[in-house]
Length: 364
Image 1: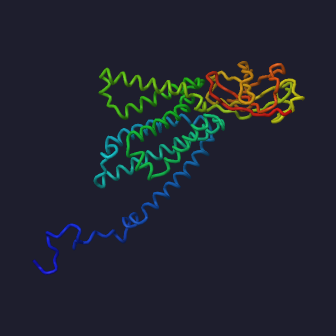
Image 2: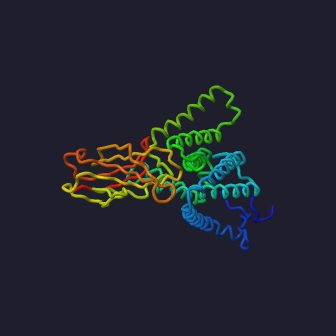
Image 3: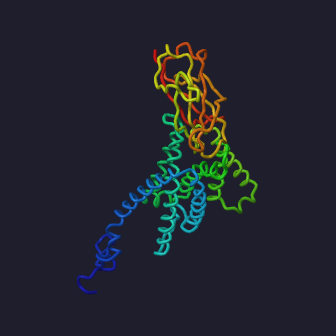
């Protein structure tokens, strides 16, 4: 053995004479090695900007919502293929340049599909939600999903690493999209019927991502499948107050002491003195682009307590196509003994979903 050469029996902790391969210093590969992480973050900002553009595009109208069904179908098929090719969690395999390229292409397409759907949904849910009520949190969750879809590192390394995380993300997106797609495809659909149908379809899609179709021949599996689907429907039914009834929203609402002959308020007041009140009138303009599938009501509340529920709100077409005007009256004898305080007139569906509200105050 030559003097100075390393011994084959040398401990593994001693440095080896073979130097580690240095990263390339020139060319496209070297550029991506050096600036790869920076480029991913740049792409995330680009995706966020694209999402803002989609929000602006969504203002063009409710009729574009039906195109979401194509994105939903594409995302579902890609997810099924993705986890079949690469596996889930610790079993995920990305061996070889070809596998890495397929992974990159599929995650890139999925991110674009999700970004298109989620950012398109946001303005519709934002208009339908009412601040300081439970249904605002659904919009917050939707906005968080939209933001996560723009973060390449989180999307690739977390959401697309675990099948459960990916399918839950798709479940939320599918449910939110179907609430908008179903009224666009089937006008005059009742909001609660739309929600329960969306929950059932989303539950079935989630199930099919985890359970092979051939297992449906087993009675126990069928029983679990039915319980799972019914559980999703029942959960949405009892949690309906936490979901905005898209695409309905109150474009304008106000309260006043008297009406003009044409049905408009003579005065729109945000604050009234109780000595001037003989009766109160509420007028709300509700946009219903999906048609009149729900019967709407006015609920008058004082300091959070219901005072009157008016089911005959005299709905009439008003202004642009797809807008109706609701009117109701609260007579003086229906006022509480001490009417001073914060008041609201809520527009709600017959199933208890809050569409919007007009707030005012009575002073002493």
